[in-house]
Image 1 (cartoon, rainbow, N blue to C red):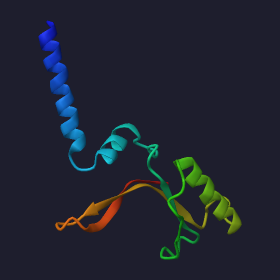
Image 2 (image 1 turned 45 degrees about the horizontal axis):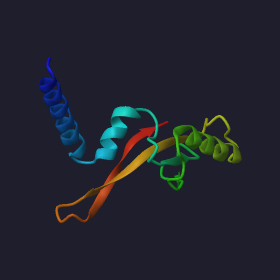
Image 3 (image 1 turned 30 degrees about the horizontal axis):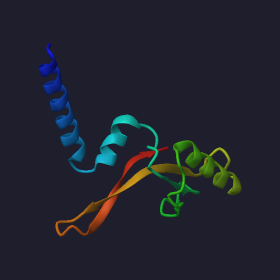
Image 4 (image 1 turned 90 degrees about the vertical axis):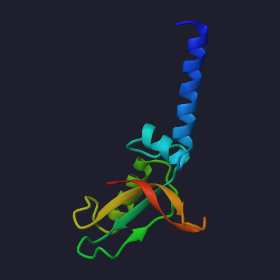
Length: 119
């Protein structure tokens, strides 16, 4: 390959990457590619703890304050120990990673979704 072909290949690759990243939500797209089982550096993690699995509507939802999944799990295990269930035999939990809001047809906020939910 000569220099001209290399430049064209690099330019075409750059355009393809920019097109893929700019479609939809680029932060979420990049996080999905690289951080498949943990939070990206810009994402926060929310802990969802159910102290009693027989009462699934009795939830404790933390603020989105944790930087990674291990901090979320540590928080949940601390809460479970405080409730007398250190092995989580009665309760359950989930760690919700990276909330991304969506917009409706009029460009107003229309809810959103977490990128990843792990136990």
